Image (cartoon, rainbow, N blue to C red):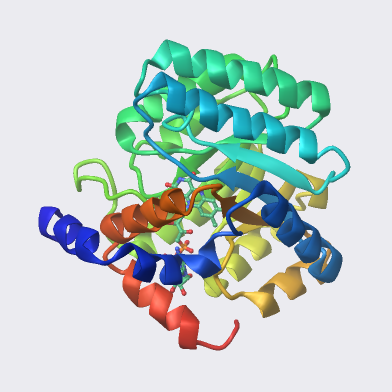
Length: 300
Ligand SMILES: Cc1cc2nc3c(=O)[nH]c(=O)nc-3n(C[C@H](O)[C@H](O)[C@H](O)COP(=O)(O)OP(=O)(O)OC[C@H]3O[C@@H](n4cnc5c(N)ncnc54)[C@H](O)[C@@H]3O)c2cc1C
């Protein structure tokens, strides 16, 4: 991991920026909104907007980041197809958990008043308990709130049990973080089979489920489960990251009446975008391969 980190950090910023370009919707809120509008107008896709930046350790940087989120919230006024996604690390968890909690709660209050969906992303396993406890506490007050579960973690089934009665809004994904084998599955197929199992469990628990994967085989399997369980189309959706070429399956899902939400990250400072991709490259050794494969691969 340290070797990989050193190697990735040696890649010059401008080169990382070239790699990052398809995965980031530009360097301003205006560009991100223009991209969101285009996706919605041309492909009937919904959007969740994410402002890049993670693990801030100074109060002033967190306040600046949160301020951009308030601007984004105001700008989304006439865009009912957009929600927002935030990260606890970006909202000040590493300054202090209480500071972060206050920032998230205040923002959730503002989103609730605006009727705007807000998802608290799931980060590394040091923060899973805290994020879920916060979610359980805030969700009854702010029904617009959603969060994320990672199917690679052995704990996730129990985490769903801990959400009983909450009526949670869950993004169900395999998880991006490298987690020790004592805590998580190491085989991707196992993680994806578990994603399906958890989809069933979430539906049975009365939760809203957003299936977030780009694996077409598993998208189809998840869809079959949703149809078998007769989940209404307003109780589930599919999600994908900006830049992963999945036009055909996106079109198929939208035509079948599903919401397909694209996670659209942007940063006002390209350094944040570059840092974002560097972190992804460090976390996931297969990322370079994926990036290259997607550049040359036809759409699925
Ligand atoms: C909307 C959304 C939100 C997410 N939020 C979180 C979160 O809060 N916390 C968290 O831990 N994880 C999050 N993830 C990441 C997720 O957990 C997975 O790491 C990621 O989606 C890759 O897993 P996969 O199921 O697509 O399967 P994979 O087998 O990893 O990918 C299937 C195929 O999709 C393509 N692909 C997948 N990811 C990428 C990529 N990044 N770049 C280029 N091509 C790619 C490749 O062609 C690959 O072969 C999110 C994912 C999505 C779609």
